[in-house]
Length: 382
Ligand SMILES: *[C@@H]1O[C@H](CO)[C@@H](O)[C@H](O)[C@H]1NC(C)=O
Ligand SMILES: *[C@@H]1O[C@H](CO)[C@@H](O)[C@H](O)[C@H]1NC(C)=O
Ligand SMILES: *[C@@H]1O[C@H](CO)[C@@H](O)[C@H](O)[C@H]1NC(C)=O
Image (tube, rainbow, N blue to C red; front, side, top):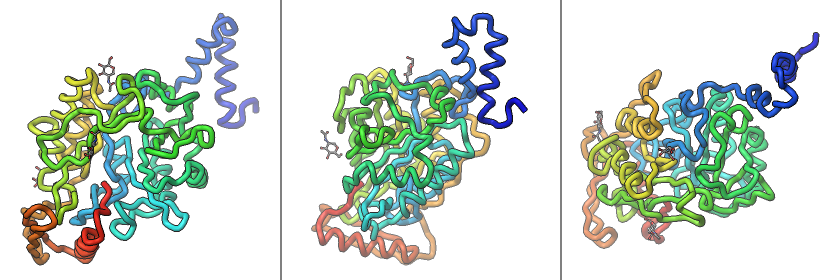
């Protein structure tokens, strides 16, 4: 057998091509282009294969691991696999050093523990293996300044290092990123950004966030305040990719928590305070749409967040199956069997009166822990 294994397939193609292409030697660059190019659909659309990674709008999930229902440390209520199946292509996470193990927790691991980074990345790896024509980004808030080499060990144990993209240099201007087709064809379809402690010399595929991406503000408490001003960067905002934080909070005992009652409006494609309107503001301000749209409970709106991204990308949004149905319920309108506790925290949050529905032990625990946290000082980190 001349070509026994799949790994010889490319060599076989090269040989066939050399025979069939008249100027194979003179035009080797051309020949290799046509050979290495395999993906015809990239992230669901043929039109995206030739587009630079930095020229595409992706939907991202804020605290993608912080999954829960009626727990005010939760920012999502669908599994990571469901998020990916529905079209999320950036997973944001907050990483903590817990006795030498990297865990994904919201604020503190005693508040909401989303499990180890290793388990999380295994889920991501399984999904990427099953979806070979998809490019995915991870955004890690490295809150405890864990060295890049510690992340490298976890990526290696899961096997994600070998499908991670390592640029020749960094930072990279939005227009200079490889195309989705190139990333997919080269098998390097995972792009990971760390908000600090990136070190390309030590770990070439863990990219520095803020020299490559700027962000809008993230602590928005008034739906009228979503804007497209630069909030955080360490680079040249005229050429960087950018990310909008489009999630609305309300104060619960003086601490920000997702404003679930407003999610349909916040995640909508149109209307005041909507994701669509926020993106339009960015286009007006900066002449291009954001690269990443970070949202809470992405499925509220019935796919509207993906519609916004598709509109920006100039592709249709026709999901094969409808997005997941929301699990979280607005406390204000829920009439479930939980008991209701009214708390007036005049000294803590400027006289705001908050009503809680206590549905389960988890929510009650979060409520009590958060109360303690407020007494101990402001420990909540978004
Ligand atoms: C991608 O490039 C096109 C053409 O220049 C532009 O209209 C579009 O706004 C760009 N999108 C992003 C996300 O940069
Ligand atoms: C960035 O946003 C944070 C949170 O909303 C805010 O506290 C801070 O003042 C902002 N910084 C700048 C430079 O806009
Ligand atoms: C959001 O919209 C869905 C679908 O229209 C609806 O079932 C749900 O009650 C709405 N939630 C809120 C908080 O308005």
